[in-house]
Image (cartoon, rainbow, N blue to C red):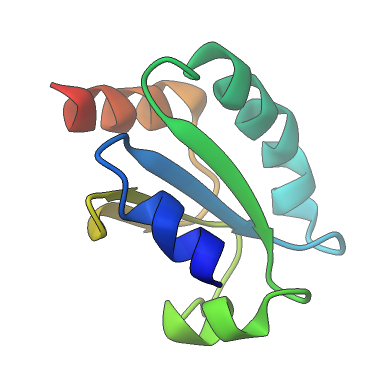
Length: 99
């Protein structure tokens, strides 16, 4: 939990994907999230949080449906979406947080 807070308090944007292994839409998003982690590493960090393994974070951020994406910067939530999101939208939100 402390490491999560340190990461999300960074001045570098952090895109967090809340997911789980049994979720079909989450499985569909997984390759996109992995690509973003590689392609956007200069602009942002990308984390995947399994809601079954991290129940405290799931409760803290009131994750009610998955996948849920939250973009943090300096400890603040800049953007949040609970649904399948296309790669272009995720990149756009990351870019807005960098500028």
